[in-house]
Amino acid sequence: MKLQQLRYLTQVFKQGLNLSAAAATLHTSQPGISKQIKLLEDELGVEIFVRNGKRVTAVTPPGKAILAIAQRILQEADNLKQAAQDYSNQDSGNLTIATTHTQARYMLPDVVQRFTRRYPKVKLGLIQGNPVQICQFAISGQADFCIATEAIATFEELVMLPCYGWNRCVIAPPGHPILKLKTLTLEEIAKYPVITYDFAFTGRSQINRAFATRGLQPNVVLTAIDSDVIKTYVALGLGIGILAKMAYDPARDTGLRAIDASHLFESSTTRLGIPRHAYLRGYIYDFIEMFAPQLSRKVIDAAVHSKSPIDYDL
Image (cartoon, rainbow, N blue to C red; front, side):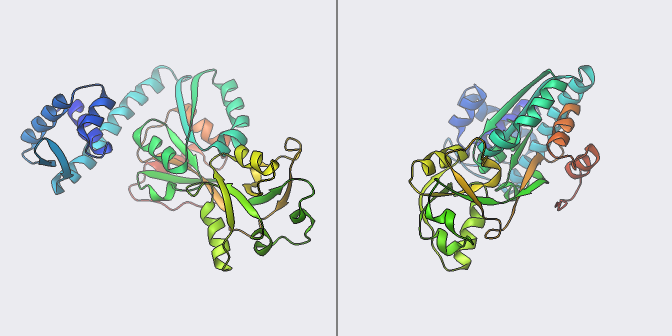
């Protein structure tokens, strides 16, 4: 049994049982992958995949158990490398964070600046995407952890640690009638075209739920994954925006005005998603604590290495 065989096995599964896609990802040949997986099956004495000719069509019951174990073995192999690097060179390395545009643009700059001053030899990378994508980046090992509001709860492979709570505001160009209201209501918002986040994004479910509870259907004319895009089109007069409060700055967004909408929507919690049983280098703990001071190394280790899921909240 070889680690390479386990990598081939798990990559085929990650690529939806597509051998060609797995071969392309691993920079090898499809026959080579098929041969190594067959050798592994022969050694273990069970079939891992169901085949129809040369095509892989399903995972067998023992194959599901073997895949889970293979993923843990590969993670521990990566942990060995991380541990060795940590002890040989504690102040240099790589840190890749998967996050949304809102976090990268409005919440992380100060932390990144402080971190790079403390660890100038660490190469820091930010991968942006929607919440589902960034969770997958963390699970696949493309990122050390992810930061998101939505979707993390649906991935059992990740430990969810709360960072901070937030809510929303409504933005509009100066002089818009909605800015003159003494009390902002969902009924008033529903009178105007609305520009807000994409369905998979940043608390959109809370927005939808609030309107549905009142029997209202907002007139959403444009959605985006980028807070700056929402502000751009609101400024053009295409509609009013429902935006994360953190993304509005009166000093910077001089062509817009905002009204607090916290009383209309459930608050959201931004969370950190860390792969279970991952080995984290020392500087990763420091970055996390800079971003969310309540997440000390002790708290993180207790969550990441717990044998059973723990429900953490603010």
